[in-house]
Image (cartoon, rainbow, N blue to C red; front, side, top):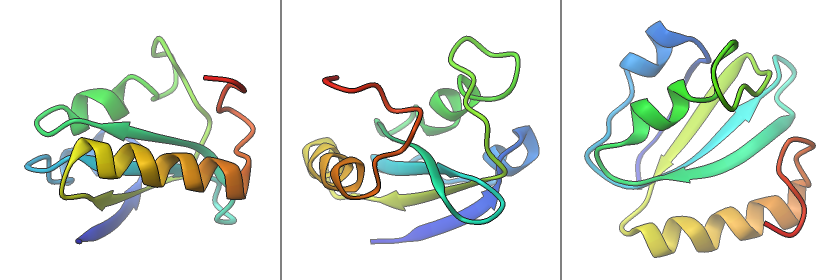
Amino acid sequence: MASKKVPFNSKGIKKLPDDKPVLYRIETAAGKTNYAGVAKRGRVKERLAEHLPRAKDAIPGAIVRIEQMPSINAAKAKEARVIARTKPRHNKRGK
């Protein structure tokens, strides 16, 4: 499926498609994953905005990388694999 990388700010988020469920990764400038999550179709931009600085669930990062998935279940399965492999420091254990 399609993937895209943009700066992790409100302008970058506005450029992202939200017509399919996505797996997203908030990364440092060096490319290390700080957080991995999923967003449902139609809610991608809103969900990522919740992680911006001064937001409810703020996560530090410089880049957001998304990967569109065929279904929300496929996105959740891949999210679990990404978290197990990369162990992002802002993903809560046992969630």
